[in-house]
Length: 299
Image 1 (tube, helix red, strand yellow):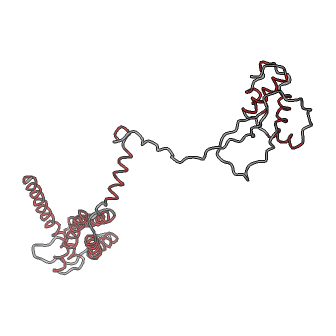
Image 2 (cartoon, rainbow, N blue to C red; image 1 turned 180 degrees about the vertical axis):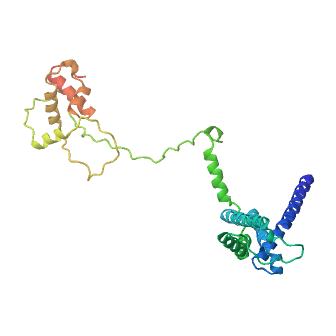
């Protein structure tokens, strides 16, 4: 661990030495450029710190800032690097800008072509103003830059939930679903709707003359459905439809009509119950009555 720290410290020290030597080379050219555009001796000496110094400030800001602020710092670093390169290049092309050691550079042109000279002068004179603006902005961004927010337990729980959802079924701790708890709520017991059991003697009944069906009975028979009813619980009295209850005589008349062409072997209580649509007790009573009328043995 100590060797790793010593290596990093040596690398940083070497970088500082290289940057210092590069600044000394660039400082000579930028000082002469500043004297050529009208700066006095003191201003020309400080001019390289304005350009190359802001480059160092922007480089430090890129290491501290993040996001859009870091992009802004990189753009400032790139702009001032290009500007310093251009001015160093012009200094190498124009011999009149070179000064002897300690001598002051006279005011001269940076290029023979007027548009190029105007552009170079504008560039050289605008760099100090830009350093004030961009340098202040970078310092303000660095001072107001806070550390990355620490994730709260809720955020950590959400991230762990998302990670758990992204995992495959075989990786999950519990792969089987939880058992479904049945609804323990008891439903009301259905009330069987049927006819009141009629008391009919087992002995043969006297013959009853058929009577014409009334319109009410006709409507009641037509309203009956072939589909078996399903128990759905207690039906309110208000919602129940009016249904005419047939008497023992009416049931016997209807059973006679239905079983008129039936053979004796088919005359059973279940068959009568299905055709007449009555209760099992009434069906057995009707069976006995019909068998007695035919002279058969009553079960």
